[in-house]
Length: 277
Image 1: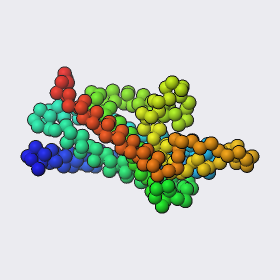
Image 2: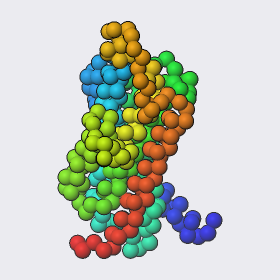
Image 3: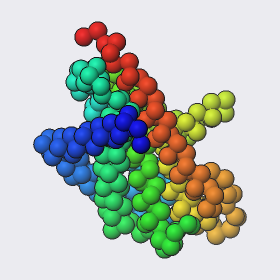
Image 4: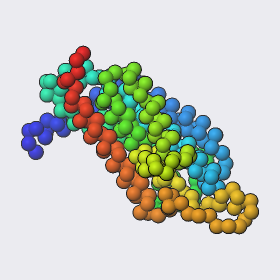
């Protein structure tokens, strides 16, 4: 490994340690408590028919994914912009922006995984999960992966926004718009005009909902009408196909968006020297 590569790795270690110290000193564990509270509230709201009826499952999963996206965005939306002046100074003295972003991503992934574990445990306690998963032997394990990747993709999106904006106030002003776009334009709960339906493919929520619904084999569940009348077969929704290939595609897209958001944030943050402050 050349000296430059070794230097970048050393910087990752240094800034990763800083992330953990900041988490400890600023009582970042409160974010885990917040995740616990949100999970309990969502579990209480979504009802008993999740993973029993098609419509209830789709609505319940959408609510769960909303919680994941909120959690991810809130993790990182202020993490970079609040240190912008420090980053500018250290960048001029040799800081590699890619190393700085990589350190944050490693830390954020660990935090996102911990939050996903909390959500998975809470939901499994209050909501009856399907007995089996499509890929793994346990549905909770597939849900854990989907929760983790959804939270992390939203986290990476928040990190990108934090790299672009100049201060914390702007970040919190932008956050509601980012959240609304992710949820309303996902097509999971609200109809989108045919000419603009392609937009939903660019949202994290669309792929998060699709991954969970596919693992739950939602197409095999009865609708409310079928449950009542006991006739007519349900038309399968290809976006929720309960196949290994489809679930892997959903996970791959979420990983891809995480990398895209991270790279975009890195590109914008490299312009920090141009700040006129």
